[in-house]
Amino acid sequence: MSPVARWPGVNVSIVSGWFPVVGSIVAVVVLVAAVDWRHRRWRRQLGYGVPIAAVSTGLVALVLTLGSLVPSDFPRTTYGWIFAFVLAVCVAVVGWPTNGHLRHLLTVVAALFTLLAALGTVNQRVDAFPSLNRLITDEPEHVVGTPELNQIRAQVATSGKLPDQGVVFTTTIPATVSHFETREAYVYLPPAWFAKVTPRLPTLVLLPGEPGSASDWSNLGDADTTADEFAADHHGLAPIIVMPDPNGVKTVDTECVNSRFGNAETYLAVDVPAFARSRFNAQTGPGSMAIGGLSAGGTCSVMLSLLHPDVYRTFASFSGFASPQYMETTVAQTVDILFGGSQSAYDAHNPIELLRNGHWDGLAGWFEVGDQDTGPLDAAQELQPAALKAGIATCYLVVPGGHGFDVWSQALQDAFPWLSWRLGLTPEPSTEPATCASP
Image 1: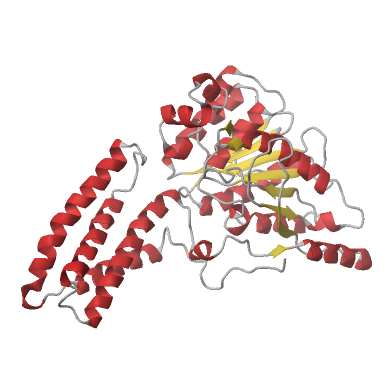
Image 2: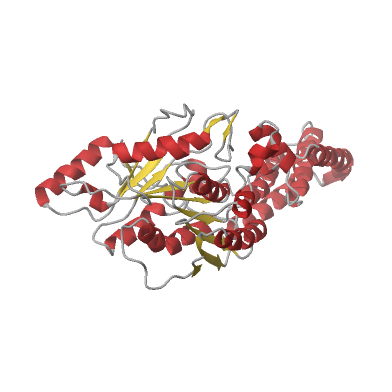
């Protein structure tokens, strides 16, 4: 596969900054312009449109609320934009027989823009598409295939000089034990991996959130950039980074547990480590693998380390939650959907419950979260002292920001030297931005 570049000029945030503000203003202006204010035709358009839009919005809100289909902090502005969208459709339908071509176009554009504004408020909540670039492509900035990997190896063998940067490529991780139906994974190989004699490097597994993609850490979280910058200061050395898909093809949220949606936990605890060690000559000794993740992936990283300390002796939770939660449903719904109704099975995969009732020697965890991210901030403040009490060395850091990739990319940069040290690759950092403590 040849390298794929991000679309130029479209790496613009659509969840914060000027874009959503301008989009909202344009939607309102076009909606007002779409109404036919001549000869009091607007009375008929709004006379039908306003009541229909109000009733429709109320019904949508009622269904979503009674069905527990949205979280308690679901943005109320979404309902306002649903009202505007239905109103725009009514304005278009009622005025269509008497409108000219220009007003036909305005009504269609008004309906489209108000719908996009409604979807945008939901996107701001879940951060599924942080940028325009993410809407266009899931691919990271530089992706290579096997021919390019072989070419780099040949160049290093000839010149004796390591490449200036590592590479990212897509691969399928065989689900040999788990039989988990999953999508492609992404892997970062640092410059040192291309040496004439492939060194046995440690592995860092990075998990996305929900909803999310295996490419998120490279495409939006700058994982390969962070690793390249670290490698440049350490003679090309950095961990191999494996970015698997933990959610598979049967759902958008497995919470990394074995469930009716597939054996995600076995895939991440058995198949992924085995693949890294066999395919990339990665280290196999104790402490040679770490796992980290953002949002729900952060919850997974804590859980998997606690349940499989022989595999992952180091974890990093960036804006993670205290407990597994299926698609922001209630605890009871999560227990029913993911654990077959078994409360004991849920508790056995609940990080806060595990920490309260267990003790671990040799584990270490990094907790980092934005100061405006209420739920994950509360979780970090609960999990970090509980982990310390359970014998786990911890680092804790609160940074400015909310629940987004500005925090998560910074968190990986902050934790990377510490992770590399924990993996035995580089010396212990002399200073850390976080507050670190041993039990």
